[in-house]
Length: 84
Image (cartoon, rainbow, N blue to C red; front, side, top):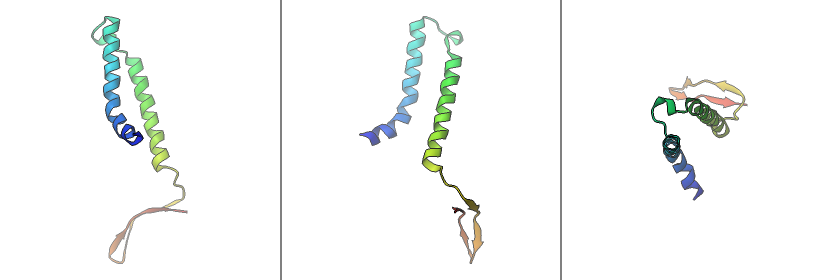
């Protein structure tokens, strides 16, 4: 069940947020650009971007050491790596 949530949440989240936005606009009685909460949309976008950077670091980060670039050795390409 948790695996289903992890895979479907990134797909469903934008639609849920858009639905909440439409609900807010209809509830306020305004329509058009003046009803658009630009500040909140920008703030939410910045928070999501920051969370994506932190999530990327948690999943792929944490490797420290010296980088050895890819090289051509004995007729084949040896991929780069991070060594201790």
